[in-house]
Length: 76
Image 1 (cartoon, rainbow, N blue to C red):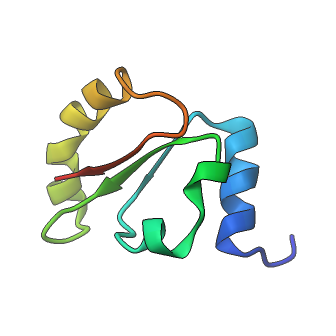
Image 2: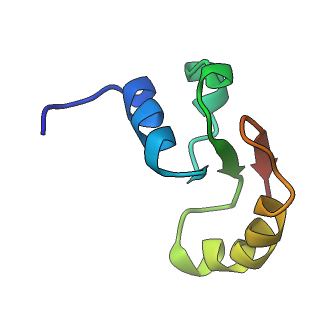
């Protein structure tokens, strides 16, 4: 598959997924997320180690249940 830019990847993801979880805290300033039909959670953690992120997943899962398409939530 040819290389794709982030905005294009997010649009493709929105065709198959309801939510996008990322650690990229610059995503909101880099992309026009109003045009992306995804719920987006931006993880804010001290690091991106699995052990650290696993601690957030129960709360992330609960948060996803209350989000709507197009919502962008910073999560720590």
